[in-house]
Image (cartoon, rainbow over all chains, first blue to last red; front, side, top):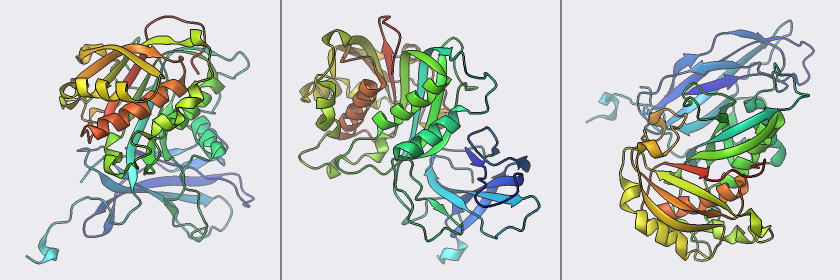
Amino acid sequence: MSGHGWWKKGNCTGDRANVYNCLYEWYTDNSWRQKACSPHKELRPYTGSGDRTVAHATCNSSASTSWRNHVDVDVIGESDTSEWPSNQADVPCWVG
Amino acid sequence: MPERSVAAQPGVVSGARRAAGTMFAALYGELVPHAWRDPDSELDAYSMFYHRSIAMGWLDDTSAGGGIEDSMRRAPGLWGTNDAGWAHPLAAAKAGLISWFQVGASAVADDRPLPVQPFLRCAADATARAGTPTLSAVQLLLPVQGLDPASRPPYAPVPAVLTVPWFAERDPEARTPVEVNINSGRDPAIPAIAQQLTDHLGRLDQDVFTCGSHGVAGQDAVIPPPLDDRFWNGPPLHGVVLRGELVEWSCDAVGWLAEAVADCAAHLGIRAPLLFTVTRTTVGPAGGR
């Protein structure tokens, strides 16, 4: 399975950011365990181009499992806020 | 045994938002690229599909979290985007793959079908941004396991039937012969209910699809899907093929039929993803949207 990362400029003045994203699999002890991260890439703001990072984890079965994709964005030359946004989904992919 | 001594395993968060499952579409045929379009354009299939989904109000954004906008009221929708492309490493050679799209379908309302028509609308619109398509086949992975036939209200046991009038105003000459392959992968569930499925479809108050005959279909009867088998219990070993006519050769009509077949299959006890492939059996005028 794959998760993507990108950023939009919002009210930032910089037009380049270091971006990466990571995939986390949920475990029954209520933990989210990191299973894959993308390479760090310096990206322009996402305006519909192919400027995205991709994290990929290989599924070992198709059992339904909860996943989060976290994206970290560090806008070059600007102090960032500390949030780490994510999207969560149940996916037929079990890595373990 | 104390719970802490049990090794933790991956699983599903309890109380999480329900989802229907993975829905996938592959469009086959020919695509004549727009002369004005930069062939090196960075605007890819994912981008086209994602932005079209937002524009139509169909993108589900409720799973977002962890940002400064946590208190925002986020848009519910029909799906969250997963991925898309113009080519796929698992596509069969000479199959004529034009584009593919994968989403996570949101939970389906009790009186609404799987959102296959809007899904294919965005897929077709995204593809048409790259060129002019002439479709020969449409292939779908339908998350039938996300349907609960017991929750369907009496007025909508197969909700797609409620939208049949959309197809009433059309050119009678537009009817198109097709073959519909419905495949349950390694599980022989679909061949086992082939007669019941065609009977169920035949009893619906609709003329979007008229079935002439049906038969058991083997692996060679369907385009190998550009999907990892683990997505859906593949490869496509066990299926049935329905031969008949669609009211028109369009993604709307294909989507409608997929919605109806998914509900009929769920009523007959299917609780797993189905591979659904509609192939045009005559060559017609350019188009296919």
